[in-house]
Image (tube, rainbow, N blue to C red):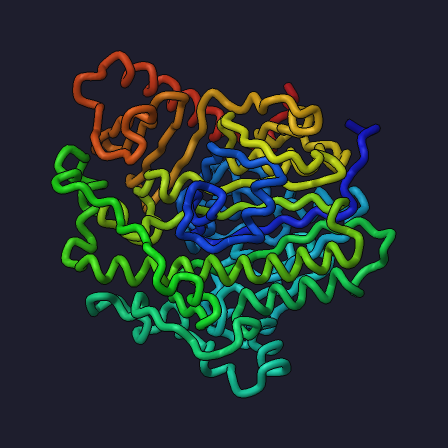
Length: 480
């Protein structure tokens, strides 16, 4: 691998809540995502990438370190990844001579009232840190930029702090989900801000002979959803899919999942449709920004030498199965299976291909490092796909993927996905679910009753995977 050319720029793009089917090239003709479609047509698309947690902070701490949530100690939102934690992606790339740049959302620390804390920001090893965790709540990098570039629009784009009662959920639909379309240039949005500062940086912000590792963290399509008119324009008059809700599908599910499926049982279909339409507009806003960034890369003759990695921290139910957002018990593909594409013309060529091999989000960091000729720390449990990608060999992938969530003490759950099955189990003997992946892709029927042999096999696989994920990442060298 060390004799292979390495990319000059690594551009790791992460979104928040974006589903696998949020991209037109993923068989979603209702989506307007031409920039992302180009990545998927000319790059390598991983069809079976699963997150390590269906919740923001555990997932982000996991893929940014290449470790499982049980190893980082970040199991729920509100748990903090310590500033001194090592390894992190920026520390790995900085150690190999890359300038590490953070733009936008990182969310390894709780962000409520972070503009009231005057202490230096936790940078986790980034050399440049332009952070904004949530658009419009705080006097952060985004709002300061908005004040300079679009004076007078700060209040229009401002949203309530996440803990504010005014952003509460006491109404139907909840105030947080009362979506609106903003009459303002899309460039003034959070996605527009990222498109602008990333393009400017790529144009004149660094030395041409310097290698760059850039994490570009979009907030969209996370709610509250306030796309601009330009973002929503492609969906005017377009047929949009209704949520997939089967009558009575909650009846054969264990209580923890039943409760989640009935949270929004009094919503009407129009509420779900409105949520989905605004969700799509937010995705298109991300695409506008990516088109701007790609244009700058091409103008600067950097496009072919840039490894672009696009993915999301988790998905969003968008009304499917009668649920919204993500959650500690949401293991449906809508939240746990995410888009992942890698695009690098000088390394992979431009003949796009789809990889069916199963991968986990923790496999991304070792794969990127390997592609850059960087030694992958032995402690990382992720599997590098670099050799297969460079040789155009089908990615072997994993025999199973593991996803884990802990809503609180004695309230844990875990999921494994194998070639033919998805198995979910809740702690305290509170139930289990078995979905067939081949003949029930919508994941409607619980096949656990009557499949004792399959259940026994998958209980063993889950136990082994949990044992592996619980190993201390510092204990790879033993002293006796």
